[in-house]
Image (cartoon, rainbow, N blue to C red; front, side, top):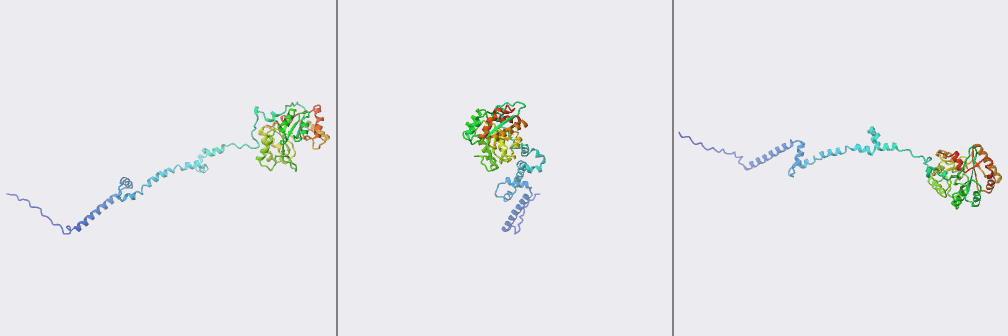
Length: 377
């Protein structure tokens, strides 16, 4: 029996609203919005790290998300910036160790600035400068000293004549006496080098007679040392006087009753003497002189005047003072007398000098007194 052929499928007619073009357009728009919402949901579900990675990969300007995600990357760069600030405490400790000490007390011993300050030696006091000795490790006063023998058990006498050089006639007469005498020259005398060399050749020792301020109204001469001067000017004037001639063993004061009593003013003078290796003879024009005390502190060679010969300018008065000088020498083993190139002094010395040894004394330059009694350190 013959099989019937299958019948064709019947077309189901669409509802009328589906065949409407307006309805189809709305359906298409709805489908697009559904897809967009789905994409947004999927994108929002990703992690923050994926968003950063997606922003770095997708360079298309059509995506609206990358411009908003571009503000996120500054957060990661901020981490290395925070790491760069970590060494700041070490730099603070180096630049300001005083602030780092409370925070890290253990590092106090390793701080270079604090160690350097702790190891600095104390400054050398002005009253104890290093001795600048001449060649041969001998002080200058010893090199310039007049050779003299000092017998044991006999008192020695040194006669010092101040104010040498101004009155050339009387200075020459004094230098012509039998010595040894110690002749102290004013630095402002004329032809000082020639006068002093002639006296040294005649067997006398030399000194510098430095003008210093007196306590009375008297003129000590040009470029005198005054208490009103600052230290720099005092040293400047003193050095100029020291350089006026050479061959001397030391310095004593011309006048200076006010200046030598001022310890602060006198200190740089003796410091300079000590530095040059010279001795100090304190004329003791005032009982308040600080000269000997300073010299002892400096451990430098020094001596003080015992007798003034010619406060009264007569031959008899000078001879009486020479007798007093002998008495002092017997008592303490030595004596230093100071006179001046006056006529009375020259005449009295001319008669006293030849017989001094017969009376049991030894006439010596002032350096011999210093060498045997006050050579310092």
